[in-house]
Image 1 (spheres, rainbow, N blue to C red):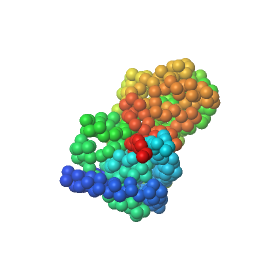
Image 2 (cartoon, rainbow, N blue to C red; image 1 turned 135 degrees about the vertical axis):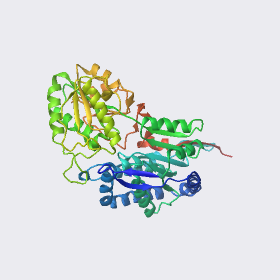
Image 3 (cartoon, one colour; image 1 turned 180 degrees about the horizontal axis):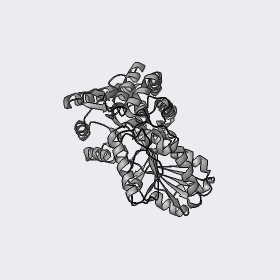
Image 4 (cartoon, rainbow, N blue to C red; image 1 turned 60 degrees about the horizontal axis):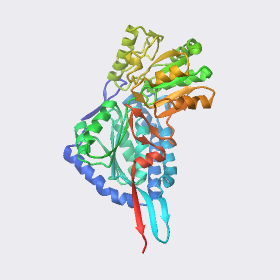
Length: 455
């Protein structure tokens, strides 16, 4: 049984039985059988059906927003995820024809030589709870458009998300066996992967979860896309707009209670601006209202689960014991459970876990740096590499710094955003592969070459 414990009050909000091994294999067989008819449909039809399914999700938004608050704690004032959900799906729909087009090498009197992109077959999407709609659609939409059938296994913290998506897509006319929402335990998931059930597996989650996926797929040659941990840095250069940098970087660290894949977890500031930046950051955080996410006045909700908050508290407590300075007094709503005071730390070093391990919560350490070289060294001193945010008025300077950072995406004067036109990717313990953009389609298909000699 999968149970969602609501961070609002610690009560069971939803529970669903997992499929048995036989039930999981039967669902898998239905997905495989349905794929041939699905890919035989014209591309334009698949695009239209996916777009209709996305629109149906939008029609459910009034129900979805409070459901998200109950399941993972995001305040209702932020209105859910449909804006990003629609933006990503729409972009992938709009580029599909060109991204999936044949690559014609020759079409002469003697030969036709062409490279086509063909779907993998069945794609398993294992989606996380922190942005449950947007992370899922990153793969679901292009996978379906490319002609794959899709099985969606959502996080136990957000079980209603997959059900909503299935309801919306089926109502749009996508066959039930083409897009299936499934509830699986970890062992059954691993067994299906090990049995070479899928043509491609996309997983977003923890490093340990990604390692389990890789172990299950070992020797099967199954394609895998993994987006795992992060410890994303921000660097405020000596010529930065301090107000804009503080507003954006602190929002990037604290929004969604810090539970963002590409959230800012460490900040480096040119030493001459360090005190001013910290003062601005502290003022911003002290203005947050921690509380019940169903209250429209709440700006910071609980973390999705008490155990996540416990890890942030542990990292913060250890850092303070080792000499870090905490700038935010405990909020009265901090209950020692899922409701957690947001925190800014200075006098931090890379010997502290709060500057090394993924926190995935509302805490950020801020350090002064002498110059670009020191900032680059510190930004690269991490096991992770998803995004980095550089704040400067000079594009050439930002690009020169970006060329030296070990990461998947570099932002200049923005943070915590996913651009569907660019490949969403990472390096080191953040994982492998790439989603969205043209490259996302390349990863959800395989090249097939045709060398046709004419009579």
